[in-house]
Length: 101
Image (cartoon, rainbow, N blue to C red):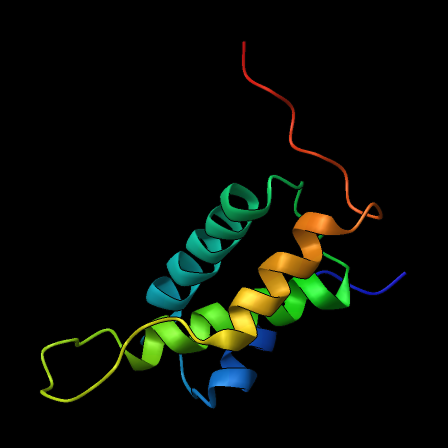
């Protein structure tokens, strides 16, 4: 089984050195997992490659677009994340989130 996604994995993907933004990046990771679970209705699988890519992609998008005041910048989440959400939500390999009472 593949290893779970780590802060260092995401920092490497973002090309971030040092520790100054570790808290921000960890918050982005946590937010990405929560977002993906809510959008897909599936339980996060930290060792799955598709989930890892989705979390890294969202972290990258949010990290690069954290200042949305730049005129002309389109900060919408692109087709890639939509495709990953669609795949995970339809795939029977992932467990459904438990329904709250």
